[in-house]
Image 1 (cartoon, helix red, strand yellow):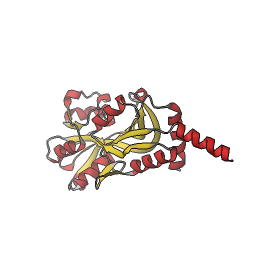
Image 2 (cartoon, rainbow, N blue to C red):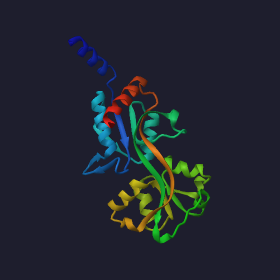
Image 3 (cartoon, helix red, strand yellow):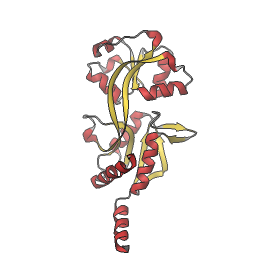
Length: 228
């Protein structure tokens, strides 16, 4: 029995790693509250790392603009980004643990704008704010919109601020996060509506592509017990 426990401990520590973990402001999955990153996915990250014996670099999850976090995990080993939509275009860029939840990507506008979108082609008539390299922007590009026709912003706050000020017609974003952040900014969410649903997507933890495959397999197995 002692030998079994020793071997189990050795197996666990053999793959124990320290990771820099990045996320963005996207409630209810991940958000900053009283100086600490919290949220449904954040809790799952912490539970999963503890269960598998891995550690967060400096015991901290860094909240960054999406494009910056995405860039870091693309180019630096021992990094992870969450909550990330898994798409065919991203498949080979990362190793994946999940799914850990679902997200509705949609077009959100003010009701007073009276925007009506019946087909994807209708979206071309509006000035839509996006964040570069996000799944919602990719969905718009797949519908035939050009980058030149989009209003691109580095962070969510700027994107939502322009919508509130009527400087864009709509935003492409996670529906859940859009309404949560608008409320946090003091907006009356009853003044906004989803005018078009782009897609429903599963969310994942995206690890740097050179992460140990055995570790990814172990974490996916451990995740099943946590989700249950």
